[in-house]
Length: 359
Ligand code: FNR
Image (cartoon, rainbow, N blue to C red):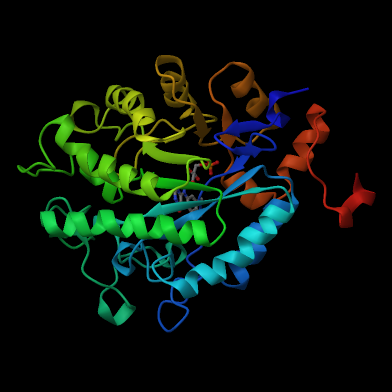
Protein backbone atom coordinates (compact mmCIF):
# COMPACT_ATOMS: atom_id res chain seq x y z
CA UNK A 1 0.00 0.00 0.00
CA UNK A 2 1.21 3.50 -0.77
CA UNK A 3 2.26 5.67 2.16
CA UNK A 4 -0.16 8.21 0.71
CA UNK A 5 -2.87 6.43 2.69
CA UNK A 6 -0.95 5.92 5.91
CA UNK A 7 -1.95 8.09 8.85
CA UNK A 8 0.34 10.86 10.01
CA UNK A 9 0.51 11.88 13.67
CA UNK A 10 1.71 15.32 14.72
CA UNK A 11 1.48 16.07 18.46
CA UNK A 12 -1.95 14.76 19.54
CA UNK A 13 -3.56 14.89 16.09
CA UNK A 14 -3.65 11.95 13.69
CA UNK A 15 -4.37 12.82 10.07
CA UNK A 16 -5.93 9.78 8.35
CA UNK A 17 -3.90 10.11 5.13
CA UNK A 18 -1.33 12.33 3.40
CA UNK A 19 -3.57 13.80 0.68
CA UNK A 20 -4.06 17.35 1.91
CA UNK A 21 -5.76 20.46 0.57
CA UNK A 22 -3.74 23.71 0.73
CA UNK A 23 -5.27 27.08 1.53
CA UNK A 24 -7.05 28.61 -1.48
CA UNK A 25 -8.85 31.96 -1.20
CA UNK A 26 -12.41 31.91 -2.43
CA UNK A 27 -13.00 35.68 -2.26
CA UNK A 28 -16.61 34.92 -1.39
CA UNK A 29 -17.27 36.57 1.98
CA UNK A 30 -19.35 39.70 2.48
CA UNK A 31 -17.19 42.84 2.13
CA UNK A 32 -19.26 44.79 4.66
CA UNK A 33 -22.05 44.41 7.21
CA UNK A 34 -22.40 42.15 10.25
CA UNK A 35 -21.15 39.01 8.49
CA UNK A 36 -18.03 40.62 6.98
CA UNK A 37 -15.29 38.01 6.65
CA UNK A 38 -17.52 35.15 7.81
CA UNK A 39 -17.74 31.94 5.79
CA UNK A 40 -21.11 31.33 4.14
CA UNK A 41 -22.85 28.72 2.01
CA UNK A 42 -20.19 28.73 -0.71
CA UNK A 43 -17.40 28.05 1.77
CA UNK A 44 -19.38 25.29 3.45
CA UNK A 45 -20.16 23.50 0.18
CA UNK A 46 -16.60 23.92 -1.08
CA UNK A 47 -14.85 22.50 2.00
CA UNK A 48 -17.54 19.88 2.70
CA UNK A 49 -17.15 18.39 -0.80
CA UNK A 50 -13.39 17.88 -0.36
CA UNK A 51 -13.94 16.33 3.07
CA UNK A 52 -16.56 13.92 1.70
CA UNK A 53 -14.02 13.16 -1.04
CA UNK A 54 -11.57 11.66 1.45
CA UNK A 55 -9.06 14.53 1.84
CA UNK A 56 -7.06 13.88 5.02
CA UNK A 57 -6.51 17.49 6.08
CA UNK A 58 -7.99 20.70 4.73
CA UNK A 59 -6.34 24.06 5.32
CA UNK A 60 -9.07 26.67 5.11
CA UNK A 61 -7.94 29.58 2.92
CA UNK A 62 -5.95 32.62 4.05
CA UNK A 63 -8.04 34.06 6.88
CA UNK A 64 -7.17 37.57 7.95
CA UNK A 65 -6.28 38.46 11.51
CA UNK A 66 -7.64 42.00 10.99
CA UNK A 67 -9.77 43.81 8.38
CA UNK A 68 -6.62 45.48 6.95
CA UNK A 69 -4.96 42.07 6.71
CA UNK A 70 -7.31 40.83 3.99
CA UNK A 71 -6.04 40.40 0.45
CA UNK A 72 -9.43 41.56 -0.79
CA UNK A 73 -12.56 42.92 0.88
CA UNK A 74 -14.12 39.50 0.13
CA UNK A 75 -11.63 37.46 2.20
CA UNK A 76 -12.43 35.44 5.27
CA UNK A 77 -11.43 36.90 8.61
CA UNK A 78 -11.18 35.73 12.19
CA UNK A 79 -11.17 38.90 14.24
CA UNK A 80 -14.67 38.62 15.77
CA UNK A 81 -17.04 36.11 17.36
CA UNK A 82 -19.59 36.15 14.51
CA UNK A 83 -16.86 34.75 12.28
CA UNK A 84 -15.97 32.10 14.88
CA UNK A 85 -19.56 30.90 15.00
CA UNK A 86 -19.76 30.67 11.19
CA UNK A 87 -16.51 28.62 11.02
CA UNK A 88 -17.94 26.09 13.50
CA UNK A 89 -20.31 24.73 10.86
CA UNK A 90 -17.33 23.91 8.61
CA UNK A 91 -15.06 22.42 11.29
CA UNK A 92 -17.93 20.25 12.62
CA UNK A 93 -18.61 18.81 9.18
CA UNK A 94 -14.95 18.20 8.36
CA UNK A 95 -14.46 16.41 11.67
CA UNK A 96 -17.58 14.29 11.01
CA UNK A 97 -15.84 12.97 7.87
CA UNK A 98 -12.57 12.27 9.67
CA UNK A 99 -10.89 15.21 7.89
CA UNK A 100 -8.62 17.32 10.07
CA UNK A 101 -9.74 20.98 9.95
CA UNK A 102 -6.87 23.45 9.64
CA UNK A 103 -6.86 27.21 9.07
CA UNK A 104 -4.30 29.56 7.57
CA UNK A 105 -3.90 32.76 9.63
CA UNK A 106 -2.78 35.63 7.43
CA UNK A 107 -1.99 39.29 6.98
CA UNK A 108 -1.66 40.51 3.41
CA UNK A 109 0.67 43.47 4.08
CA UNK A 110 1.42 45.54 0.97
CA UNK A 111 -0.60 43.16 -1.24
CA UNK A 112 -3.83 43.91 0.69
CA UNK A 113 -6.90 45.72 -0.62
CA UNK A 114 -7.19 44.21 -4.09
CA UNK A 115 -10.16 43.03 -6.09
CA UNK A 116 -11.12 39.39 -6.54
CA UNK A 117 -8.75 37.54 -8.87
CA UNK A 118 -11.45 36.83 -11.43
CA UNK A 119 -12.16 40.58 -11.57
CA UNK A 120 -8.50 41.23 -12.40
CA UNK A 121 -7.11 41.50 -8.86
CA UNK A 122 -6.25 45.21 -9.17
CA UNK A 123 -5.84 47.33 -6.02
CA UNK A 124 -9.12 48.85 -4.82
CA UNK A 125 -9.66 52.09 -2.89
CA UNK A 126 -12.43 53.12 -0.50
CA UNK A 127 -15.13 53.10 -3.20
CA UNK A 128 -14.32 49.41 -3.83
CA UNK A 129 -14.45 48.65 -0.07
CA UNK A 130 -10.63 49.04 0.05
CA UNK A 131 -8.11 50.62 2.44
CA UNK A 132 -4.49 51.80 2.64
CA UNK A 133 -2.10 48.80 2.95
CA UNK A 134 0.80 48.54 5.42
CA UNK A 135 4.23 46.91 5.08
CA UNK A 136 7.70 46.75 6.64
CA UNK A 137 8.90 49.41 4.19
CA UNK A 138 7.21 51.97 1.93
CA UNK A 139 7.82 49.98 -1.25
CA UNK A 140 4.97 49.23 -3.65
CA UNK A 141 4.64 45.61 -4.83
CA UNK A 142 4.47 46.77 -8.46
CA UNK A 143 3.40 49.79 -10.50
CA UNK A 144 -0.28 48.92 -10.02
CA UNK A 145 -0.11 48.84 -6.23
CA UNK A 146 -0.03 51.89 -3.94
CA UNK A 147 3.00 52.64 -1.78
CA UNK A 148 2.14 51.03 1.60
CA UNK A 149 2.48 52.81 4.93
CA UNK A 150 5.60 51.78 6.81
CA UNK A 151 4.63 50.03 10.03
CA UNK A 152 5.80 51.57 13.29
CA UNK A 153 7.22 49.27 15.95
CA UNK A 154 4.04 49.80 17.97
CA UNK A 155 1.92 48.73 14.99
CA UNK A 156 4.12 45.65 14.51
CA UNK A 157 3.43 44.67 18.12
CA UNK A 158 -0.30 45.19 17.54
CA UNK A 159 -0.25 42.81 14.56
CA UNK A 160 1.54 40.16 16.63
CA UNK A 161 -1.30 40.49 19.15
CA UNK A 162 -3.86 40.19 16.32
CA UNK A 163 -2.28 36.87 15.32
CA UNK A 164 -2.47 35.77 18.97
CA UNK A 165 -6.17 36.67 19.20
CA UNK A 166 -6.85 34.97 15.87
CA UNK A 167 -5.27 31.76 17.16
CA UNK A 168 -7.50 31.88 20.24
CA UNK A 169 -10.55 32.32 18.03
CA UNK A 170 -9.44 29.58 15.61
CA UNK A 171 -9.31 27.20 18.55
CA UNK A 172 -12.80 28.26 19.67
CA UNK A 173 -13.99 27.69 16.10
CA UNK A 174 -12.94 24.02 16.28
CA UNK A 175 -9.75 23.94 14.24
CA UNK A 176 -7.23 21.20 15.04
CA UNK A 177 -4.29 22.72 13.17
CA UNK A 178 -3.26 26.35 12.60
CA UNK A 179 -0.96 27.44 9.80
CA UNK A 180 0.84 30.79 9.81
CA UNK A 181 1.01 32.32 6.33
CA UNK A 182 4.64 33.30 5.86
CA UNK A 183 4.67 32.95 2.06
CA UNK A 184 3.69 34.52 -1.27
CA UNK A 185 4.78 38.09 -0.61
CA UNK A 186 2.29 38.78 2.17
CA UNK A 187 3.24 40.56 5.39
CA UNK A 188 5.44 37.95 7.07
CA UNK A 189 7.24 37.12 3.81
CA UNK A 190 7.74 40.88 3.27
CA UNK A 191 9.59 41.07 6.59
CA UNK A 192 11.70 37.96 5.88
CA UNK A 193 13.02 39.13 2.53
CA UNK A 194 15.70 41.81 2.08
CA UNK A 195 13.97 42.61 -1.22
CA UNK A 196 10.85 43.99 0.51
CA UNK A 197 12.28 44.81 3.95
CA UNK A 198 14.55 47.89 3.94
CA UNK A 199 14.12 48.71 7.63
CA UNK A 200 17.08 49.86 9.67
CA UNK A 201 15.59 49.10 13.12
CA UNK A 202 15.35 45.77 15.02
CA UNK A 203 13.01 44.36 12.34
CA UNK A 204 15.25 44.85 9.30
CA UNK A 205 18.78 44.41 8.04
CA UNK A 206 20.37 41.20 9.32
CA UNK A 207 18.81 37.73 8.95
CA UNK A 208 18.10 37.79 12.71
CA UNK A 209 16.26 41.10 12.44
CA UNK A 210 14.27 40.12 9.33
CA UNK A 211 13.07 36.90 10.96
CA UNK A 212 12.17 38.66 14.23
CA UNK A 213 8.55 39.50 13.27
CA UNK A 214 7.87 35.98 11.96
CA UNK A 215 9.22 34.42 15.16
CA UNK A 216 7.25 36.84 17.36
CA UNK A 217 4.09 35.81 15.50
CA UNK A 218 4.99 32.12 15.84
CA UNK A 219 5.67 32.50 19.56
CA UNK A 220 2.42 34.40 20.18
CA UNK A 221 0.34 31.86 18.26
CA UNK A 222 2.10 28.93 19.94
CA UNK A 223 1.33 30.39 23.36
CA UNK A 224 -2.38 30.26 22.52
CA UNK A 225 -2.35 27.03 20.53
CA UNK A 226 -2.64 23.97 22.82
CA UNK A 227 0.35 21.67 23.27
CA UNK A 228 -1.53 18.74 21.75
CA UNK A 229 -2.32 20.57 18.50
CA UNK A 230 0.10 21.03 15.60
CA UNK A 231 1.19 24.37 14.21
CA UNK A 232 2.33 24.72 10.58
CA UNK A 233 4.24 27.53 8.89
CA UNK A 234 3.93 28.19 5.14
CA UNK A 235 7.11 29.61 3.66
CA UNK A 236 8.12 30.77 0.21
CA UNK A 237 11.40 28.85 0.08
CA UNK A 238 12.75 31.33 -2.46
CA UNK A 239 11.75 34.72 -3.88
CA UNK A 240 13.37 33.50 -7.15
CA UNK A 241 15.70 36.52 -6.88
CA UNK A 242 18.90 34.74 -5.88
CA UNK A 243 20.85 36.81 -3.32
CA UNK A 244 18.60 39.89 -3.71
CA UNK A 245 15.80 38.08 -1.91
CA UNK A 246 15.01 35.30 0.55
CA UNK A 247 16.94 32.20 -0.54
CA UNK A 248 16.67 28.40 -0.16
CA UNK A 249 19.66 28.60 2.22
CA UNK A 250 17.70 31.08 4.37
CA UNK A 251 14.77 28.64 4.36
CA UNK A 252 16.92 25.74 5.57
CA UNK A 253 18.38 27.92 8.33
CA UNK A 254 14.92 29.16 9.33
CA UNK A 255 13.48 25.62 9.25
CA UNK A 256 16.19 24.44 11.60
CA UNK A 257 15.21 27.18 14.08
CA UNK A 258 11.44 26.68 13.94
CA UNK A 259 11.08 23.46 15.98
CA UNK A 260 12.40 25.32 19.05
CA UNK A 261 9.53 27.77 18.51
CA UNK A 262 6.93 24.99 18.36
CA UNK A 263 6.39 24.65 14.61
CA UNK A 264 5.56 21.05 13.71
CA UNK A 265 5.57 21.13 9.90
CA UNK A 266 6.83 23.42 7.17
CA UNK A 267 4.50 23.88 4.18
CA UNK A 268 7.00 24.65 1.42
CA UNK A 269 5.85 26.92 -1.40
CA UNK A 270 7.82 29.57 -3.34
CA UNK A 271 7.52 33.02 -4.89
CA UNK A 272 4.95 35.79 -4.72
CA UNK A 273 7.14 38.53 -3.24
CA UNK A 274 8.55 39.97 -6.45
CA UNK A 275 6.62 40.52 -9.67
CA UNK A 276 7.94 39.40 -13.01
CA UNK A 277 10.43 36.79 -11.79
CA UNK A 278 11.04 33.71 -13.91
CA UNK A 279 9.69 30.60 -12.21
CA UNK A 280 10.48 27.27 -13.88
CA UNK A 281 7.06 25.71 -13.31
CA UNK A 282 6.33 22.10 -14.18
CA UNK A 283 5.08 18.98 -12.40
CA UNK A 284 6.22 19.04 -8.78
CA UNK A 285 8.51 22.03 -9.42
CA UNK A 286 8.59 23.06 -5.74
CA UNK A 287 9.18 19.57 -4.36
CA UNK A 288 13.00 19.89 -4.34
CA UNK A 289 12.72 22.82 -1.91
CA UNK A 290 10.62 20.72 0.48
CA UNK A 291 12.97 17.75 0.06
CA UNK A 292 16.00 19.87 0.90
CA UNK A 293 14.42 21.04 4.17
CA UNK A 294 13.42 17.48 5.02
CA UNK A 295 16.91 16.15 4.33
CA UNK A 296 18.87 18.91 6.03
CA UNK A 297 16.73 19.60 9.12
CA UNK A 298 14.56 17.60 11.53
CA UNK A 299 11.48 19.50 10.31
CA UNK A 300 8.63 17.50 8.73
CA UNK A 301 7.47 19.05 5.45
CA UNK A 302 4.55 19.11 3.05
CA UNK A 303 5.17 19.63 -0.67
CA UNK A 304 2.91 21.68 -2.93
CA UNK A 305 2.76 22.85 -6.53
CA UNK A 306 1.56 20.98 -9.61
CA UNK A 307 1.13 17.66 -7.85
CA UNK A 308 -1.80 16.18 -9.76
CA UNK A 309 -1.25 12.48 -10.37
CA UNK A 310 -1.64 9.61 -7.85
CA UNK A 311 1.59 7.90 -8.91
CA UNK A 312 3.49 11.19 -8.74
CA UNK A 313 2.16 11.94 -5.25
CA UNK A 314 2.97 8.44 -3.99
CA UNK A 315 6.51 8.69 -5.36
CA UNK A 316 7.20 11.99 -3.59
CA UNK A 317 6.42 10.27 -0.29
CA UNK A 318 8.19 7.03 -1.18
CA UNK A 319 11.33 9.00 -2.13
CA UNK A 320 11.32 10.70 1.26
CA UNK A 321 10.88 14.12 -0.34
CA UNK A 322 7.91 15.08 1.85
CA UNK A 323 5.72 13.81 4.67
CA UNK A 324 2.50 14.86 2.95
CA UNK A 325 1.37 16.38 -0.32
CA UNK A 326 -0.93 19.34 -0.91
CA UNK A 327 -3.06 19.33 -4.05
CA UNK A 328 -4.53 22.72 -4.84
CA UNK A 329 -6.04 23.25 -8.26
CA UNK A 330 -6.38 19.51 -8.80
CA UNK A 331 -8.74 19.35 -5.81
CA UNK A 332 -10.71 22.25 -7.27
CA UNK A 333 -11.16 20.16 -10.41
CA UNK A 334 -11.79 16.90 -8.58
CA UNK A 335 -13.04 17.07 -4.98
CA UNK A 336 -12.87 13.27 -4.71
CA UNK A 337 -9.22 13.01 -5.82
CA UNK A 338 -8.31 11.02 -2.68
CA UNK A 339 -11.03 8.43 -3.38
CA UNK A 340 -9.84 8.02 -6.97
CA UNK A 341 -6.18 7.79 -5.93
CA UNK A 342 -7.01 5.16 -3.29
CA UNK A 343 -8.70 3.05 -5.96
CA UNK A 344 -5.80 3.47 -8.34
CA UNK A 345 -3.05 2.73 -5.82
CA UNK A 346 -4.91 0.35 -3.55
CA UNK A 347 -5.37 2.32 -0.35
CA UNK A 348 -8.18 3.08 2.02
CA UNK A 349 -9.89 6.37 2.61
CA UNK A 350 -13.03 7.27 4.49
CA UNK A 351 -16.10 6.94 2.29
CA UNK A 352 -19.24 8.62 3.64
CA UNK A 353 -21.94 6.10 4.67
CA UNK A 354 -24.30 7.76 2.24
CA UNK A 355 -21.94 6.82 -0.64
CA UNK A 356 -21.25 3.22 0.48
CA UNK A 357 -22.75 1.78 -2.70
CA UNK A 358 -20.03 3.51 -4.74
CA UNK A 359 -17.26 1.66 -2.90
C1 FNR B 1 -4.09 29.75 -3.94
N1 FNR B 1 -2.94 29.67 -3.15
C2 FNR B 1 -2.96 30.17 -1.86
N2 FNR B 1 -1.88 30.01 -1.04
C3 FNR B 1 -1.93 30.38 0.24
O1 FNR B 1 -0.96 30.21 0.98
N3 FNR B 1 -3.08 30.94 0.76
C4 FNR B 1 -4.18 31.15 0.00
O2 FNR B 1 -5.22 31.57 0.50
C5 FNR B 1 -4.11 30.82 -1.37
N4 FNR B 1 -5.15 31.08 -2.23
C6 FNR B 1 -5.20 30.48 -3.48
C7 FNR B 1 -6.37 30.54 -4.24
C8 FNR B 1 -6.46 29.84 -5.45
C9 FNR B 1 -7.74 29.88 -6.22
C10 FNR B 1 -5.34 29.12 -5.92
C11 FNR B 1 -5.40 28.35 -7.21
C12 FNR B 1 -4.16 29.11 -5.19
C13 FNR B 1 -1.81 28.80 -3.56
C14 FNR B 1 -2.15 27.33 -3.28
O3 FNR B 1 -2.27 27.07 -1.90
C15 FNR B 1 -1.06 26.40 -3.87
O4 FNR B 1 0.14 26.65 -3.20
C16 FNR B 1 -0.88 26.61 -5.37
O5 FNR B 1 -2.13 26.61 -6.03
C17 FNR B 1 0.03 25.56 -5.98
O6 FNR B 1 -0.52 24.26 -5.84
P1 FNR B 1 -1.30 23.53 -7.07
O7 FNR B 1 -2.54 24.31 -7.35
O8 FNR B 1 -0.36 23.53 -8.24
O9 FNR B 1 -1.57 22.16 -6.55
